[in-house]
Image 1 (cartoon, rainbow, N blue to C red):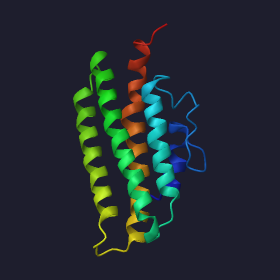
Image 2: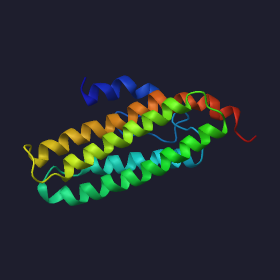
Image 3: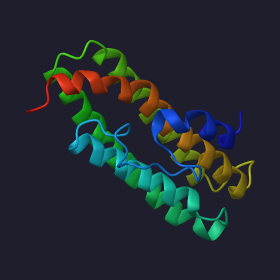
Length: 159
């Protein structure tokens, strides 16, 4: 499935527009109206900025800077999300934590590939593959693992 087809298939489920950008104001996308949502917006924005960079060698350093910032933001987010889940005794915490570890490992792999100046692949090819993978990395986890947490968060919301 192409990313365009994936975008169309998931449009209704995840609040994304036809241009692949999320409408984070959509009620479907909001989890807590707080830190988790702010983290998701930041992660999405960093990925969007990375994808917008051209696949030219001169853009490798700015791309790496964005990926390293995404790594920093994601580690902080994963810890925050796991603390929230623990505090509400989320029944899928351990699986969610394991997914976060896998996501961090995959992000490290992507960073390693983008950083590898001595590679069998041209930077433009690596960048194009990273573009696709990062979007999937984020949206697949968000839609399949984070959105289902919404009903649990609602039970603990301050009224």
